Image (cartoon, rainbow, N blue to C red; front, side):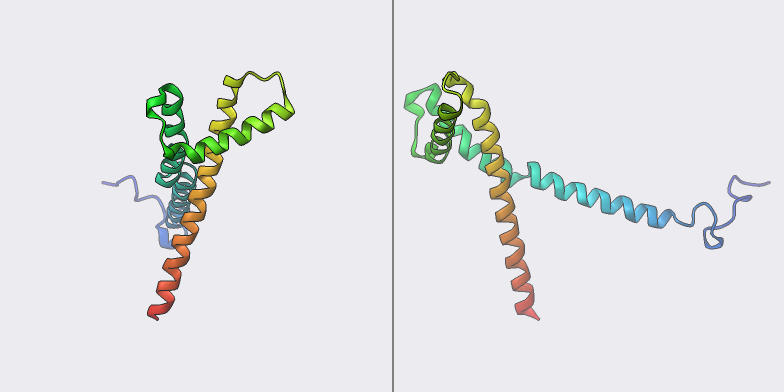
Length: 132
């Protein structure tokens, strides 16, 4: 009785499964890279910073009683975009500034989270060097 694997050369002979380990390692590297990329684009730091920039401003816009000092960074970004928008396209409706505001808030959140992540990695490396 023969099995399906009897007529195939073994991995050590350079058969079909010989480079499977390398392929698995490459796949694991790709998954790790995607995980890093995903963390940079939509990780917890990005979500937190984006929320801090947008949620207080949106709540304050919807109901004046909910306006708080936490809205100051988002409000400053919104005002800066409004000034630029008025210079570039004077007839642009004020309510249409929300889309660029959200995009810029996301960009600021990604940059801020990236800087924070780099600082944390740097401090980890410094601590590792101090132990040695």
